[in-house]
Amino acid sequence: MNREKIFSRSVLEKPESKRAARSNATLDLSRLIRMGWNENPYGMSPKAMEANLAAAKKGHFYQDFWCRDMKNAIADLYQISTANLVVGAGSSPLIEIVGQAFLNPGDEVLMCPTFAAFIDMAEIRLDNIVTVPLCEDMSYNLDGLAAAVTDKTKMIVICNPNNPTGGYLPYDKIVEFVNKVPKDIVLLFDEAYIEFATAPDCKSALPLVFEMPDRPILVMRTFSKYYGMAGVRAGYIVANEEMAAGISKIPGSWIPAAAQASVVAALSEPEYYEECKAKIVEGRDYITEELGKLGCTVYPSQSNFIMFDPHTDCAAVRDKMIEKGIMISTPMFCRVSVSTKENNELFIRYMKEILSELKAA
Ligand SMILES: Cc1ncc(COP(=O)(O)O)c(C=O)c1O
Image (cartoon, rainbow, N blue to C red; front, side, top):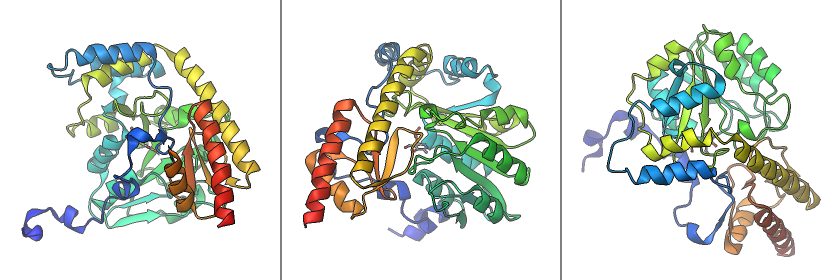
């Protein structure tokens, strides 16, 4: 096969997918306690589960292509118009759609080390992805990003709270940054984890979409994390009407009927999710404290995962943890997702064993 003749120039020139490279396809997921992919151990609310199963019975029909009920439910949540929404089958396809909607060859995209899907989205289209290092304390480097802006900068990706660090940007710093950078740069805020935040100044950039209607601001959310629907697939972008209409020109990622129904039902049961959040925050505090006692450097998290430096080989810690039956990840240092109380305690017990095994070796 003549690759040169068959594939598009983008595919021929693009390096391997960063996201695919980070996942290990040989893992036996059925055997593992999943604390590696920032999934929510509590799952969907009871009504969302019921709606999901009921929709499966009508799986021979197409879904509502216009996602009317789902859009209305999200619009009601924020008291905004459905014209401000773009919906998709989770953030990952929406990230691709945003790339398609805004990036031309020659444009530059700026970001700090963050979720790998952004690199994939930019690499398939551009030669110029500028990755600005995080600050020394691992916080997202807004000053560095502002300083890296050139006349080619088309988009800046801001992940808040950031993955894999779990750290956040205080709202006043976000506002300061938005006021500092040129007005025609697309600002893409990924807030996949913001519902887990407890710090009073960890706030969504969503109001800025409406306070600064002339600015190309996108706020992206997913139902994968807080709403426990990672495998169900639903997410959305909030933007001004012109931006939303522009993005909507791209045939979207169809959202399965079961996902649409689950979203509507989930948004009617906020109490369920508040209870799950309380348990996750408790687990986050527990893991943070216990890892600290074990001598790890733990990065404060506002999300449902915790990044920590075990001061030993991170890959060895991950592999030993997987051998014992718990999946964790190593995107920068080690990263563990908060799970149930029982799983969190097991993880800490195994960490004690692994760190003493590695010290003894
Ligand atoms: C920062 C961030 N954004 C987006 C996503 C993707 O979420 P989704 O499941 O909606 O594709 C993830 C998934 O881990 C993430 O960490």
